[in-house]
Image (tube, rainbow, N blue to C red):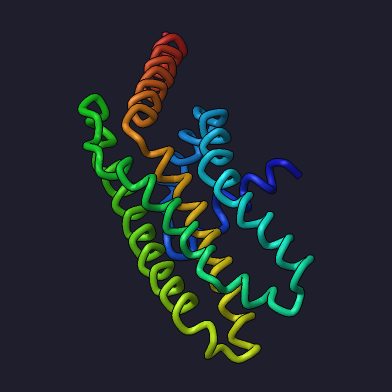
Length: 196
């Protein structure tokens, strides 16, 4: 069950991203090598930012149930999505480490793909925020539901993309490249022993 949840919140939002099999291998390796750091990132970047919104939502639901859908459409989720992406964008701007020569192009393509999804998420969350904060009084009842649904999907994309951005920082890529080269050396030694 725990592995299923990891797959859901890490890979389910790849409909736009569409990684290759090599990129999936790199991201899985980065995720496994940096599991505790990734969990800390999730707690700080997502949970701590989402908690006040959830508490305010519960309070609004308790005090003003008739205004609850309007409250959920006040632009908070798009701003949270924007913040998650924007605070992790500098990891993608870093230059690829020089000691990862053989996989440098793979890492660059991976960062480029994640950058494209991040920019799309920033663009959509900005439009949602403007739409929700300026035109909320013009909403029909069905518009509230559609807007909440789209905001939630964009938020989930932002979390998935933000975590990938965090994992693609240079220090993690350097460690990953070093671990891959150690494994390759061991495999070559094992092949040499087997041939003798």
